[in-house]
Length: 284
Image 1 (cartoon, rainbow, N blue to C red):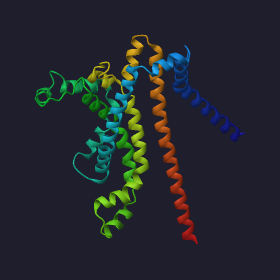
Image 2 (tube, one colour; image 1 turned 60 degrees about the horizontal axis):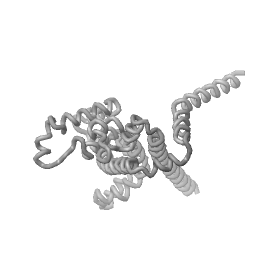
Image 3 (cartoon, helix red, strand yellow; image 1 turned 120 degrees about the vertical axis):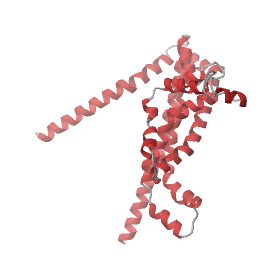
Image 4 (cartoon, rainbow, N blue to C red; image 1 turned 180 degrees about the vertical axis):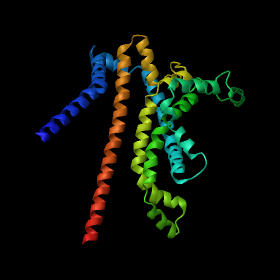
């Protein structure tokens, strides 16, 4: 009787989780798909060929790729320093990494305006150098860098902590320089985690709205990303264009994360097979 009760309780909990996830994720996606194709396929195809939509998608992708490239390098360096180096202020630095989770993206955009806007502290210097940050793509890149910072760093820290240090020490003993050790010993162990961090950062960068709206201004054809295009299309009651852009962003983000998750599981299975073969060879 006790086992039956446990089974009923488990199924009740599973049902509750499914209903919760369905309400938060599946229902909105279903409503989005319904709204997109409510007027038929032809308006969707026309929206896909819209120059404004294509320009906004290209700008979003360009910003996301730049941000991912920077975060892949510097996010890994930050994680490495936090794990491998002991210095004054390390705990503060570690805490600051999570700051983008607690600060509103709109506030981030406003802070950047206070720095780089017309009345900003750094504006006179940038004006002399001929560099425009506020209401331009560089400011949007900075905003996206800020909001996406934790994703790469938080993925890399546990992976760096779990590195096999004996392989590094063995390579040092054999006379390998630090660069060789990184590429042939450390990087293969971090590769899967790095790819997962890249996918999360890419998805976050593509979906950013508040910060890029404030610092970029959402100027059509210049600083209008895909998310800002959706906002403008909804405001102008061009619902099919807004729905189409939303679905494209959603599909791309899901594909990126799903592909990386598949690669991660494949790498894990491959490592388990290698460990099993080594165990069997030791037993024999």
